[in-house]
Image 1 (cartoon, rainbow, N blue to C red):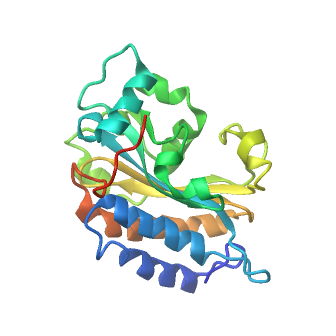
Image 2: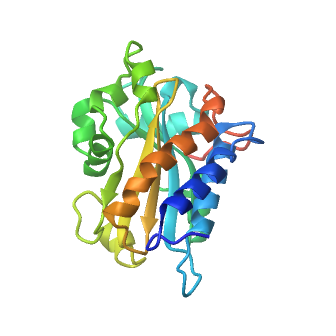
Length: 248
């Protein structure tokens, strides 16, 4: 077990080793992502109460509209109607979710975040959390919305910064202040990830009930590489495990 308040280099090494192995028996990226969210949610605990420090852990991936299952395509179309989507349209897609509330443990129960079409750079700028997430990681928004094949090799080999909001309460970059941040005691938010060989962005977001310092946040740059190692062999058009599609 680890604590966000006492996270050290040895903890990063141990956690990273565990993260790398979480995709070994997975047949789809969704299963590997579920392993990641469940492991992180269960592993970070208050050293005194042993209660989990993370209220919610989510994994997102940008994925082409044309490769989404029908249920998610329906949700995406409804979001951008009447504009018809192209098969290449990148959609920020929820792969896995684990958290304190029962509905936070089923991606199909998410009301607004199952799939978010990234129709343009301008559209991303209109969603402060997504825009800030991408820019804090050190990426250009246009490289996420429209991946350039000539840059993918360079982008996937880079080590990225982290998305770090040390004080979630009152932050313009964290939505649902009265519905989520305040009632569930969200202190800090941390996102980490990077570019996969397909040019897609993988990002893990931690919503923490304990404050996350900048020193602790920096360790997650390395953990992002470990998480990528768990999922990138599964970066295929079919990312979801065989299961009923999400209901629109």
